Image 1 (cartoon, rainbow, N blue to C red):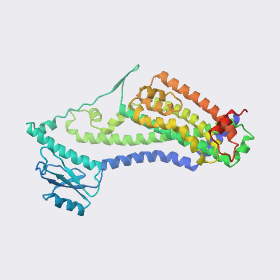
Image 2: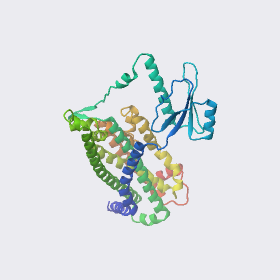
Image 3: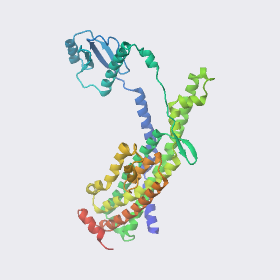
Length: 437
């Protein structure tokens, strides 16, 4: 046991002291928050280019009725269609919207030198539909302005009934935290599992392992390497969570204060009719997001996340270590890597397309129980509520899967770690597994 602890200490300290570890630990939270801030800023700002659309309307229904948008300018063109097409041929920056007379049905055509974007096509279609809708309402004797003013606003407040009582529930927040946990687990298993495999290959090719094996057993070396690198990953994740939470708390504080000040200024006239609390709940998108986040039991989810991170990492790292011991370089690992990680990839894809929308289905249940897929599937299901017995069964099977995978990997590792210059196939690995000690 003392030898395993020495190996764990060596693997842990050698990686934690690297400048790359410290740099990535402190930079990643800043980069992630900066990326999301940039995405939000760009989305709010929108595109800076304006599309010019020349309109030739032979029906007369759309004269000066197509309203401009932030990205599209409609300009009437009182010319024949032939001249309009010549304008398009000479100017690649314009689009020509031609609305011919074709009976009762309107069949517009759009001409351009380049293909129009989907947003441009969608916006033009919506503007045409708005004009036609207004005309149809007018013909039916319905005032379009009256109809437009009738817009009922309904917001469902979701509640969960628990043994402790009622509490707020938010499916969107559960969706977000489920997806985030799935992505983190998926990335961590590949990143830190690959580090185990790469470390084994490096020691094997440099022949350092021949010296090490003279002092420790192969199983001790493998376990020390797996646990040591796993603790590195756990340390990095905990630091990321602490730093991200601190940055989010600071940014949220400023956003909330700014939102409250803005709303107080805009609604100072109606203070006697609405309290500040009501303004915060109903008129502030920022505070709405914060309230949704507060419905998530972060302590509970974080503790389960750490269990599945460690369990999934230990399971897959043992397999990665076996692969590393069976090859001489990373280019030879692909034949073993793909079938080994296929369950993980399948579950990752299903998380976004099926599990997140059907967390209580039979397929979601079995994916969250099978050890090779449970680290991702269970984290997606967890925010939606999972019975305790399912969680306990899943964790128990994950631990059992780790023990079994470690046993299988150790039998391959003890032989493969000293094999050089010989390409290994599946038949060879089976032979190594059957060798007696």
